[in-house]
Image (tube, one colour):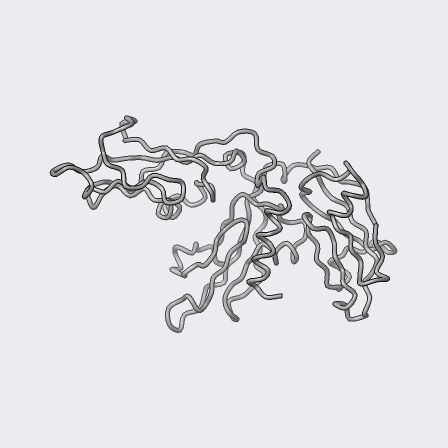
Length: 301
């Protein structure tokens, strides 16, 4: 499967599984106030791009609101504002003001989904790829496959560092993607001549419920590998067992039905995801046939 196809699949899975990206939400929340620029130059540029670099992981990936005010907390002002939205941030340009007047000094804060403001719940660090090929591809889709049950289905945030702990801002690498719903991608082709991406590791921030002790469903074994393979699909299991499996499972566990061997210890090629279920295709196996698997899901209690 190509890397670009994998990216389209993971994005599709996220939105197809549930359009409400933060299922444990109660009410949105506000970040702290940020003031990284002064209007003494061309104006006051409190842009998301620069604020994320100055305050890493302090602002949610997709803010749903923005508030700006002067340092004295007055609002509104008579300043002509060039930009104020959740995509770019806040920009007041001195050139837009009346002659002899420049922008006031502003601070901004962002409204985020509620889980972003709750107690942090970070996964372990993961490093599944090296930059010796086309680059370093730490995509969520492949990480879910390589580390089943170790990452929540819909992460809230992502952090990437080199294996020695340096941030992308320190390395100077050109990063193509750093998004909790897609993962992290650094392509060698985007770097300066004769330079290759650093080797990165990533971790994900998950809803607090993901770190708490959860409840497991019973075991399900609805298919056998006598056809094209063993298809323990979440969508089918929900239809056959109405009301027994939560809307967005946090983990999945798959074992063989005969010896109870964990799926990742059988040596077979499988797709295992709490949003999909467990899929084993016979023609992908060296023996020509899958083992018979059963699955269970971990849900918020």
